[in-house]
Amino acid sequence: MISLKGRDFLTLKDFSQQEISFLLKLSEDLKRKKYMGVKGDLLDNKNVVLLFEKTSTRTRAAFEVVCFDEGANVTFLGANDSQFGKKESVEDTAKVLSRFYDGIEFRGFSHQTVEDLAKYSSVPVWNGLTDKYHPTQILADLLTIRECTSKPLNESKLVYVGDGRNNMANSMMIGTMKMGMEFAILSPKELFPDENLVNDCQEIAKENGGKLTITDDFSILKSADAIYTDVWFSMGEEDRQKERIALLKDYQVNMDLIKKCENDNVIFLHCLPAFHDTNTKIGKQVYQDHNISEMEVTDEVFNSKHSKVFDQAENRMHTIKAVMVATIGR
Image 1 (cartoon, rainbow, N blue to C red):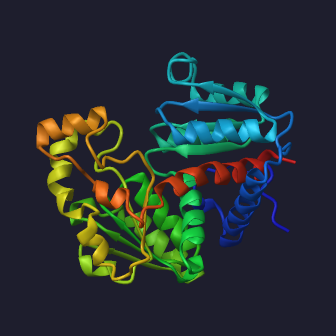
Image 2 (image 1 turned 135 degrees about the vertical axis):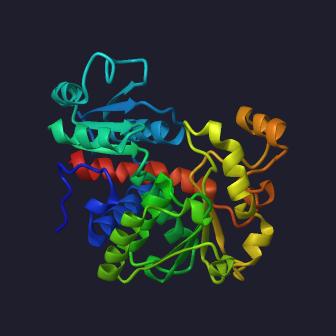
């Protein structure tokens, strides 16, 4: 019997393959219930606070809709809505909020902050994104791969293309190795992931039957079941646009890259937002400054039959619901 009651959700390092499988199965059950139009009450009378240093679309919307669906009350505290980090320490904030709420979600910059919140909180803390990890996103990714390919996870091959040392690549390494998958990071050597984390994930792979490759050799794409990419520069890295574009322009996910997989059913994933056109403020600015209209993925791939990015985005809601129900629900 698996019980995650009272557990924090900071990184998938803290969870076994069996516990992650349990969360994915619960996500499927809760998704089915929502599609049937069944009003939930698994978070009835619970109070949840969302503590955001970084802006968001999917993370905030998912956590709020989960609360609405399952009967919880929710408070959103943005960067300018509280004394957090300004007049009040992380420790004091955690102690105060855990007197008011049954669960605390944090989305921000330093992973140490969410670790400290969990240390001093008496209620579960959920990581909605930090500089190191994005575990709720990975659950959604795993669920999407399970739904959209014809293979079980432990027979699937996923290749992440682009910036190999960001929070998505880190979290993907952990999640895929926990689930015994074949996973590769295809990246320029300058952006290879942290060696210590790679070593940790190789050990996780040995325990679960996974296979991890870090390479700049495009032949790794052959027989991939899923291709994943992320933005070339994250929040707070806008001043490094020129450097990142120079490093990553050859790693754009376009149809030529898709064809290298030699798999007509390969799926394309992206955690979003994606710079696949110039219909955004940043997209226009990059085009004006660097004469590039598409960055990490072309519009052709983004809107192709391969793309499952909106299924993936929806699954943020179902998997976050599973985490919340499993840790504070009834």
